[in-house]
Amino acid sequence: MSEPLLQAVNLQCERDERTLFRDLSFSILPGSVTRVEGDNGAGKTTLLRILAGLNDAWSGDLLWRGQPRNHCREDYHRNMLYLGHRPGIKGLLSPLENLRALTAGRRPLADTVLREALAGTGLHGFEDVPCRKLSAGQQRRVALARLLIADEPLWLLDEVFTAIDADGVKAVEALLLQRAQEGGAVVVTTHHNLALPGLQSIRLGGAA
Ligand SMILES: Nc1ncnc2c1ncn2[C@@H]1O[C@H](COP(=O)(O)OP(=O)(O)OP(=O)(O)O)[C@@H](O)[C@H]1O
Image 1 (cartoon, protein in one colour):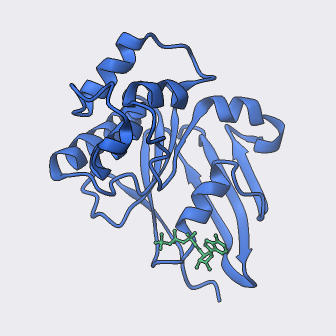
Image 2: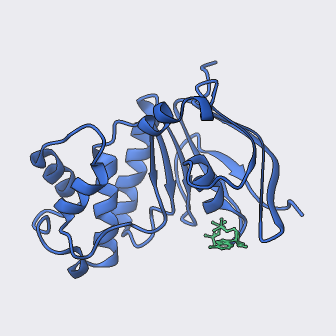
């Protein structure tokens, strides 16, 4: 069996004196898509932010390719892509400018590549329009264009299907499968009913 990309061992997290989860252990294997499940408030976003390194209020161990994540943070952040439940798009900037900003600090990409990615998410003709003039679904598509140019093997995606129409959902599902087939892994939270073969799950809830 291949080595996990990411391993969580006995994770525990409390928020507002409530235990969201404890003794939570799981492995994210190359080639997998995993859905984090749980009711509203169960801690799905919190868990994803912990995995993304954006929340330090937890205990337990996180291993990246077998190494404690704290010992290889730079490598981890180079190989992990996190999209939060808000699109994180700046309204005054165009889709092209937003995508430039979202990819800043990563491998440099020519504008032609970024424009192609925007066209790939259905934004052809809107590349240079201020994002505040776009619909909620179109703004989400700006953030999703990141997936078309992502070389990071691990994707952590929080509610990225919000405001996306049926065709968009299918296209994103195909991207998740493709990342897994290429040997990467995806961890996703969604209230949308994902129809992916081999879908793994992490269930949150019940940690009184
Ligand atoms: N900004 C915040 N400040 C304080 N506590 C918060 C905050 N956001 C969330 N919480 C607490 O953390 C718990 C888990 O929230 P989280 O957003 O991780 O849940 P979730 O499973 O993603 O929920 P949902 O399905 O509604 O998006 C909430 O029930 C709440 O008690």
